Image (cartoon, rainbow, N blue to C red):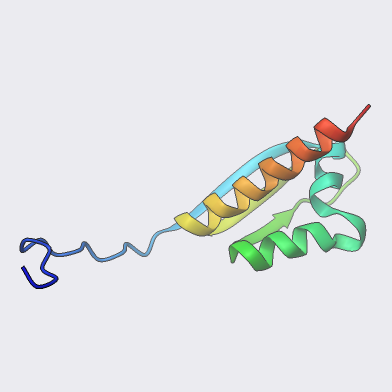
Length: 91
């Protein structure tokens, strides 16, 4: 077979926009935002997801991540890695 996949056609990629909301404690949000917003900016750029964090000084804030399934997955993975990194660095 010359590069054939046996007659199977690839399924077209679905254009699904996913929105995920996470309720986070203030310290966790601070870790995600980073100094002068650098961390959240980097996550936005690298994942291509739209990330918003609710305003306020209440103990819990809402982080909203919107984008393609892959973009949301990448952003959540980066956020989880950052939180784990900061948790391991804490005394």
